[in-house]
Length: 241
Length: 241
Image (cartoon, chains in turn purple, orange):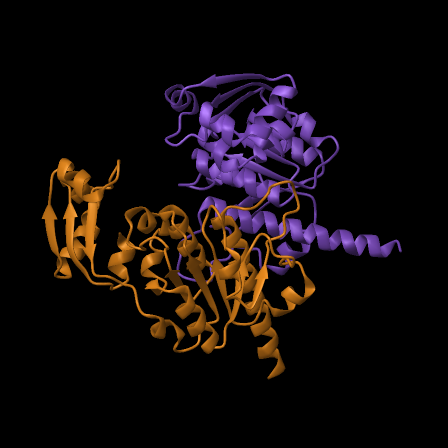
């Protein structure tokens, strides 16, 4: 809520219950002071509006925040997450939140991925929908082409890949500008989509699990790149000193 | 399902719908051949038994698989996850699955953490409940004492910690035997629980997210230790060659 307001992302209306107005008096006052219309509604109406079992009592109406591919490739980004047919809104929102934490420049909801404005996705993103540029409704083909054009390496997170993140050659390239491609939570990335990438890479499984869940795999992959890019940038800066 | 059966974890009964018996004929035959009682039930009864909206049509009754603390500290483990008041079953099951993938020796469900046999937790673990020794119902105090006694360093995953995983001193110790302590998905680890650890460590946030979700943070922490332990063990082996 506060995230959407701070993000300057075009909140047009605020709906609030009486108790929530008392509880969040400063926030509501600040929002009203910014010229946004505040509507006090009953708990019943809030339940209908919020589409959740235990609404917080505050609901903001925002403009759309998604951007097109050109907006996230100019200037060239160093870390991007491409969601290929990620259907579960909780998973997609969690990956968006993780991508934000890892410092990614954009998250692309491609092909049949869930709508980033799905209520569960918005909630799972914990405000990150308003932090990281999001591209909605792009085709994976287009997104891959745009990222490659911008100089990014396309890496498919694929549990069946022969090489893992521990592979020395994979490690050596982790610091390069990278777009990680993540597949559907149930069936991953089919071979036809893996083929779009420059390389498939698996998160190593050291125990007996068959695979990781999508959000956990994305966290390991995005942080591996983020850390390598930071280390490399320190080395590069060192070169010029 | 197949995991529980392969794990030799004491499946006593199998309930199956007619269509599922046809679909999984080989599995059902193998289970019946192992002397386990197979009961064919209607779809309605399966829905009641499985407590899920779209049951797979197969339901096994297993014995409990949890063990006590002594069983997971003898011999001394190198990587353990301690769940401190993790209440959400999906989160707990996902951390269990991730701990399994990272090669952890045990997962302890401590204090007010969810029951590891909660249906959502079992499903989110994707079979890992049958791979990794699980301790249920331990107090965090006891668990920390037992792990410390076994020579493990206790590290609290705490978003408010001053030092992050990128800190050189934290990095230098990642390869040591470690028990990672993870807190509640909403409020994390309160200071009183952080104080039980040898050190609090944060997952670095490079972007604007306030924090990571529990499962994502656990994935980054457990894999950081797992990788460091493997690198260190390679170096140690090299020392003796």
